[in-house]
Image 1 (cartoon, rainbow, N blue to C red):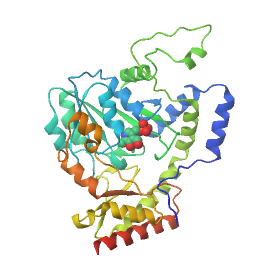
Image 2: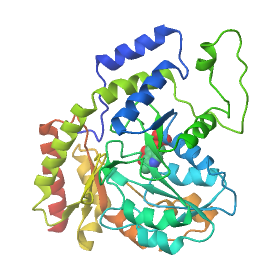
Image 3: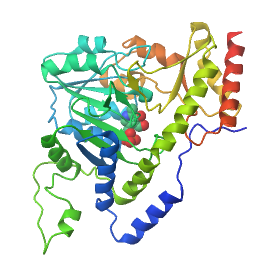
Image 4: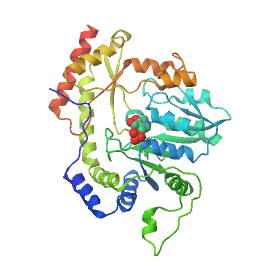
Length: 383
Ligand SMILES: Cc1ncc(COP(=O)(O)O)c(C=O)c1O
């Protein structure tokens, strides 16, 4: 049997929506984006939401709104995708990597505390796998110093922390609708923010600093000249992305039901396995469970992680490894001076983890096969 690591789920509803947009005569940011923003905001109980081209765009725009300069420091985790750190560097700030909590794999507030200086302007936390970070601890560190707490919610659209939806806990949240995410718009992203003043600024930064976009212009009499208010970049979402996103949001309850049933089946299957430890969310949080990450418990078994992953994949089960810590990559070592040993918890976690297939279209037969292959292969190396 072949069990792919990921499959996205489109129905005739998405296909029809795309056709309707193609025939509508309007492709760039317009009515569909407005409706998508409203429907995403309703789902997240958010006062403001802004559709953008990707989560990378969302992070970039949120950071740009802080007007960072070379003296400014932004703290984030190495246990993430490149986008989280790249957008900090591309905004001209100094990147400061903090270590992670080995239980949740999220940024460790005590490591953040050690790195805060008078130049710290922001902390970007990542809700890895959809499991919310320890936001009380991060807020306690950032709020007294007026440090912006930005949430990278690429994995965490459906997540909440102590009843508050992710993305609305700090300064703003950045969401991804990349094809492998829980819902997808092909490529796409969203910004949530709790502040009306900030919303207007983010909308301008999304679109070249213009005071209004071409859709708004099309609704007025005569030629309405835009003004350029400040420097901005092109991070807009288009109508094709938005119309797909609207259908995905409307089907999200069904997708979540299926995803969580699969999570419970994995949890049950691995509960008695002495070699595997699934990464679990903190108490009093809801996780989107974008990833199902397992850690190999003992050092002896973890030493064979790459062979275990290769053997499982040889038997037809797709896996992924999230994440190789950023500071171990060439650019971060050679250009930013990071070294092996700088962030020991992130490095240790990297040696132990792999992620299993988890998506609404995964059948129970496929999941049972994946479970059986994982348990068998791990037992061979433990044995
Ligand atoms: C944690 C994290 N942040 C940011 C991103 C960037 O998302 P996008 O591809 O939508 O720009 C990703 C993408 O996989 C991610 O996993």
